[in-house]
Image (cartoon, rainbow, N blue to C red; front, side, top):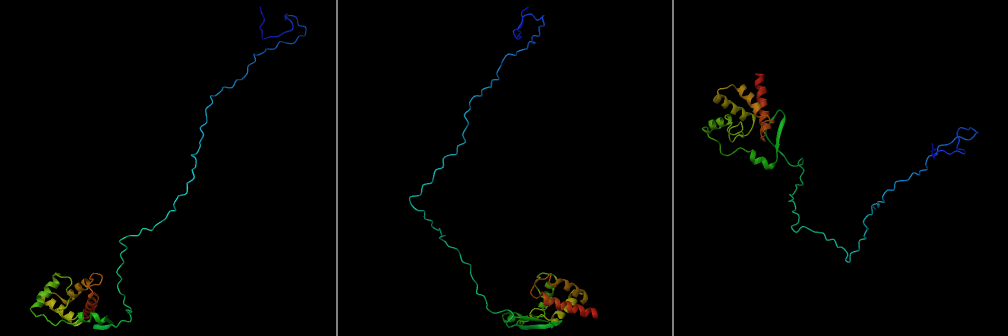
Length: 205
């Protein structure tokens, strides 16, 4: 039997033990070869070349563009130099519960009684319009009369005869109607104070 080439010995006879060294197993010599990778050209992330801006041959001139039509100016109204507290005021009507009614000279012609006094035949139609709420701007006084306590009371007396109702019931309804929060006429506050005064006088009776 032939011996393997992987064993080395100084003597071919293994039966005799003459103190020879033991054979060693020799592995074939192999090198670890690295796997060669294909050379891949790296993509270079090159930025585009920066080009310097050349100076313009002519200097830039900025012109302000204006609107041809132009802006429309707001109309300015003349302001009065008079202080409203220093303006001359006039008292009109009768004072009610210590309150006086003041107005400017321009409004005096509006407060003066009208020259044309209505005929008695027109009073019932005016009363009917007032109580039917045909015109909410009608006042509880006869046409052409001033707004005062006597004229308002006279108007409600005629209303009692027309409506066949008690004065207290009519005044109670009118207090709600002529409250300044509900009625926005300029005479609402004055009429409400007169009605309220009449209501208090009826409660004392």
